[in-house]
Length: 622
Image (tube, rainbow, N blue to C red; front, top):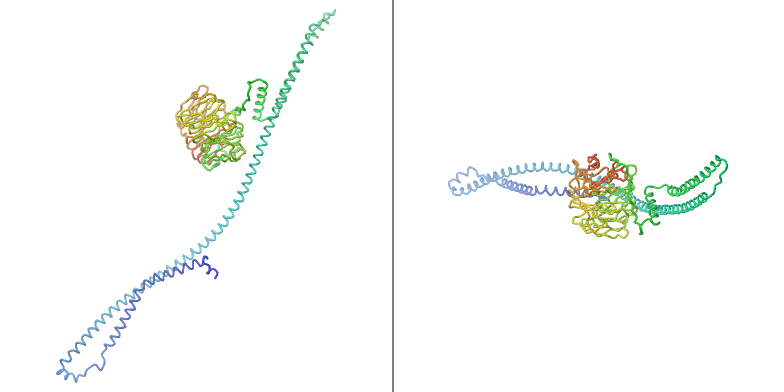
C-alpha cells in the first residue's frame, strides 16, 4: 500500500501507464461503434414497427361478407363497393412495400451483423496485440528497474571512487609539497656544500701559495748561504801534503763534497716546492669541482697581480667530456610527457637531467636513470606555449622562451618562475644562456634580439633586425641568429652592428653551435642541414636525405657532443643522422613516433638521444 500511495514508486508508475493505455484503447475502439449501435437500434425499432403494422393488417374473421349476400350487394351497391376495393388494394401495396423495406432492412441488418463480426475479430486481434505489447512493456519495465538498480549501484561506486580519488589527490598534493620542500632543502644544502667546498679549495689554494712563498724564500736564503759558503771555500787556502796521491784524493774529496752539497740542497728544495701542490690537489672532486678549483686558482693568480685590475666575471667554459659519441640504435623508453604538442627538449650539463616544454605551458624535468625517464619536477607559471628551453652552464637554472612575449627563468628545485624577462612585442622564439649564468640572449618575432643581465632582469642591449628571429646561439663574444628571410646573422657583443651575414636556402628553423665554437649547424625549410665553418665563414657541407622533411618552422637539429654527427627529426617521425666528416647519411631511425619530430637533444656524454614530437611523445634512444 505504501508503494501504491507513493507516486514516485516504480510500480505505481507502470501501473498508471497500463491504466492510461487501457483507457486510450477503450476510447479509440468505442468510437468505432458509436455510429453502428444507434443505427442498429433504429433498425430494430423500424422492424418492431413493421411487425405491429403487419399484425394490424391481418384479415379478421368478421371482416369477410357471406356469399349469400353478395348478389344483393352487386346490384344495388356497385357504387358503394368501389371505395372498399381501392382501400384494400392500397393496403396490399403498402404491405408489399413494407415487406420490401423489411427485406432491405434485413439485408442491412445482415451486413451490419457481418461488420460486427469483422469488428469483433479485429477487436480480438488488437486485444491480443495489446496483451503482447503489455507483456513487452512489463518486460521493459522490469529491465528498466534492473538498469535503474544497476545505475544506482554504479553511482555509489562512482561516489566511492571520487572520494578515494579526492583522498589520493590530497595525499599526493601533500607528498608533492613535502617533496618540493625536501628538494628545496636538498638544493640549499647542496649550494651550502658547494660554497663550503669552494671556500675550502680557496683556503687550500691560499695555504699552498703561502707555503710556496715561504719555501721559495727559504730556498733563496738557503741558496744565498750555500753561495756564500762556496765563495768562502773558494777563497780558502789549501795545504798540499807531501804525498801526491793523498793530496790529490783530498782535493778531489773536498771538491766533490762542495759539488754534491748544492745539488742535494737544490733537490730537497724542489721536493719541498712540489709538496704543497700535491697536498692541495689530492682531494676527490668531480669534473665541475675541478673546474671551480682551476677557476679559484686563476682568480688567486689574478689577485696576486698577474692580470689587469677589475673583478673577473664568472665564466663556465665548456669542457669536452665526450671523446666519441655513440650512435643511437634502439628505443629505451617512450612516454606521453605533456598534455599537448612538445616543442623543445634540452639536456643539462650533467647528462642525467632533461627538460621538455610544450604548448601546455609546462616544463617537465626528467632524470635519466637506468635507461628510463623518471619525472623529477614540473615548472609552472609560464604565460604561454614554450618554444625553447636551455640550462645554464652550472645546471641550476632553466630559461624558457614563451609565446606571451617574454622569457622566464626558473631555479631547479623551485616550481614557480624566478624572473620574467619582458620587453618583446611578439612571440619569443628562442632564449639561450651565454657562457655565464648571469647573461642571456633572446630572439623574437618582433624582429629584435635582446641581451639580458639576469642579475637585475634588465635588458642591456636591443638589436633590431629586418626579419623575425627563429633561433639564437651564443659564443664567447658572438651572437648568431637565424631568421625567416633565409639568412644567418653574426653579432659581436662589443660592436653595435652586424658583423657578417651568410645566406642560406630556406627559412632557418634552428641553429646548433659545436662545443669548440668552430662549426655551426643550421636547419632550414628547404629540407637541408648545413655545416658552416666559422673559421672561414663558409658553408662546408649540405646534408640531404630521401624522406627527410622539416615538419615545422621550429624543427630543431643538433650536433653530437664530439661534432662527428648531425641529428635531426623528420615530418614522418623518423630520425636522420649524418656523418659530418664524410657527409654521408649514417643511419635513419624509425620508432614509436607517429607525428612530426619537433626537437632532438644529444646528451653531453654522448650516450643518449631524446626526441619529442607533435603527438605529445618523448622517446629516449640509446
